[in-house]
Image 1 (cartoon, rainbow, N blue to C red):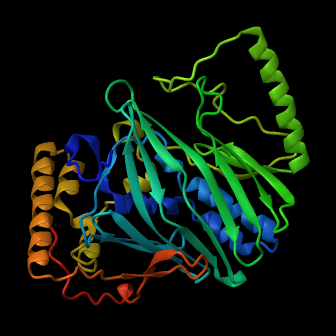
Image 2 (cartoon, one colour):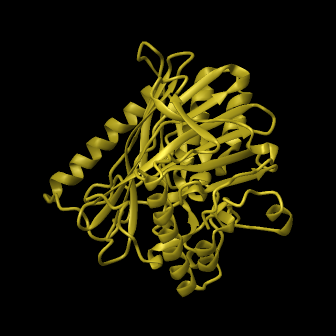
Length: 392
């Protein structure tokens, strides 16, 4: 069942727009800077893979739904401390598509893409498949990497404690060398043995395995020699089979409660190198929609910022601001008002047969994959904003 057309009560939301939630891909930007500084293509791919995994780590326990961006809504973030600036725009409403473009402040990288979170309802769970390609360009090496994100699933949406898993294959391609990194985000399985696990290999263009990667998307990623990894897997499988034969159980039902992993952390295979480790969340995170420290700062607005950002920026969106301030009834009223305003504007456009024009992005082929993409048109940072739509 397609969920994007159903109006959800504000109580299911978290006080961020999906454009802000997208920006959380950038939390571990240091991995991109590190990749740029390395001379070996395999080591660069390890860092890019770690970045791709770290980009979805903030989803863990984030069961609040971000607000659907309004058509024409924008968001910008400049982080001098992390060395990047980012711009995003809601470029389509049906289907909902968000385009973003981030660049290194030292001109060392460009990271861009567009996401259409296709939602499916499966009775007890909602599955979000983030359709769209991520493209990372390391400018000093003249290299481009592309990949798509794993599917995210929220369980127990009707009754019980909500819990989240991500699964599916993520294939990262280095378009210059032909190297690939194929990562498998594992579904949890009935006893939760595989919960949050990620593993895969980096291979050269003739498919020779150069290194193995493993870890959990909620906490860390390691790399190790492929032979060592395979020997460990073989041994692990043998032990698991011995355990299994001693207690025969079979069941294929989806687990109701979130399975507790065997042990909280990842077993580190001797000889492994740590590529990425998650930053712990602040102590009050559970009261704050399970936000990371990075997420908590996304909706911050000071006087100085207010005088330069365009009037379409989500920081100025009244329903999200009301929810952040704990004014739930006001947030609900404002959300209804904004959705109604958007519907009226759409009806008026169809009467006058006028098409919606995106402001900062245009459709075109991705320069590396050739597939249809949303590309940055430029000029946003000139701060020359005129004829912007009145969406709030």
